[in-house]
Image 1 (tube, rainbow, N blue to C red):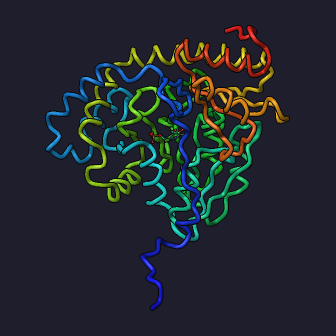
Image 2: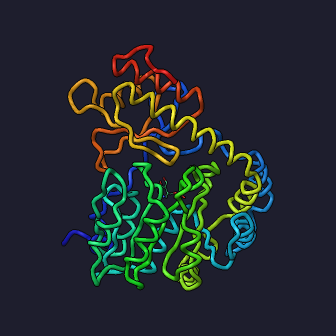
Image 3: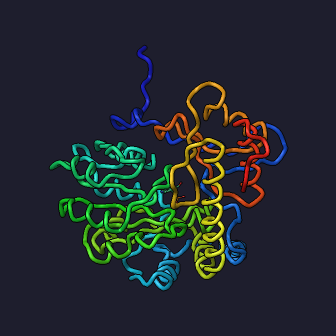
Amino acid sequence: MAAKRGPAPRRGILDIAPYVPGTSALPGAHPVIKLSSNETPFGPSLRAVEAYLGAGASLSRYPDGSARPLREALAKVHGLDADRIVCGAGSDELLNLLAHAYLGPGDEAIYSEHGFLVYKIAILARGATPVAAPETDLTTSVDAILARVTDATRLVFIANPNNPTGTYLTFDEVKRLRAGLPDDVLLVLDAAYAEYVRRNDYEAGIELVATTHNTVMTRTFSKIYGLASLRLGWAYCPPEVAGALNRIRGPFNVSGPAIAAGMAALEDQTHVQLQAEHTEMWRGRMAEAFEQLGLGVTPSAANFLLLHFPQGHGHSAREADEFLHERRIILRRVEEYGFPHALRMTIGTVADNRAVLDALASFMGADGAAPA
Ligand SMILES: Cc1ncc(COP(=O)(O)O)c(C=O)c1O
C-alpha cells in the first residue's frame, strides 16, 4: 500500500525559515539578566497591571470586537481619528495582515537588508517575492529601495528605527521615499521603537499617514509600555487600508485584558517618559563605554545597541555570548540578521547595564575599565 500523504501546505510555506526568538532562559535555577528581546526592564505601569487583573472578572465575555475603547484612547493620546486605527495581537499580527491584504503570488515587497525578520516571513507566507535593499552604514537606504521598485512592487516595509541596528531614517528621508514610490505601493512604517527616539528630525509616521493615502504606521505596546506578553499593537491607516484589514482580521483579535491594560498604560505617560529618559542616558553612556573596550557600536535611536566584536578567535561574538551566559547574562545573537560578529543588547536597569559592562570588560581583557 502506498504511504499515506497528509495535507500539504501551499507551495513555499515549508521553505520559510521559522522566526527564532532570542534566548530567554539558561539552564539552572539562578536568576538571569535577560536583555535579548528589547523588552523594558521596568515592567508595565502598575495601572496597567491593575486593569489587567480587573479584566479577570469578565473572562467569559467576548471583548469589544474592534477594540473601540482602546482605539478611542489611542486617538485621544496621539490626536488621531479612531476609525483609522486597527488594533492587533501585537504589531506582528498587523504586519502579517498587511501582507495578507496587499500581497500575493507574483507580487514583490521590498525591505532593507538588515530589516526586522518578520517582514520576509510575512511576504513569503503570501507566496510573494521578498526583495532586500542594501543599506548604507547599516541604515536603510532610500535610493537602494527606490532602485529596486518594479511593476510588480506592491509594498515596502521599513522599521524606523530598525531592529537590530537601531538606526533611523529622518522624516525628510521618509518623505523622499514616499515621494519616489509609485502611488499604488503601500509604504509600511513600523515604529515599534518610536517612543525611545529623541531626535528632532524624526517622525514616527502619523503625519505621512494623515497626508497620503498609501502609507501605514504600526506601533506596539510590547516595548516601552511593557505589555509584550499580552500581545497588543495598532496600526494607523488610510481609511481604505483600515477597511481592508478589518475585513480579514479575526473578529475578536484583541483580548479584553489586553484592551483594558493598554488603555490604562496609555494613561500613565509619566511611566513612558521616565523610561525614555533612562534609555537615552544609558544608551549614550553604554555606547561610549563599549567603544572604550574596543567594541564597535552602531549609533542607536532605540532601546538597544548593536555591538560588533573582533572577528578573530578569543574575542568573537560567539565567545562573548558564551562568556556572558556563564555570568547569567543573555544578549541576542543576530546571525540570522546578517551579523555573525555582533550581539544586540537591550538597555536594562542600572544594575543590569553595569553587570554587562563589567562582564564585557573582563571578556575583552580590560578589567576595571568599564567606566559607566
Ligand atoms: C521592528 C519591530 N517591529 C515589530 C515588532 C513586533 O512587536 P509586537 O510584540 O508588537 O508584535 C518588533 C519586536 O521585536 C520589532 O523589533
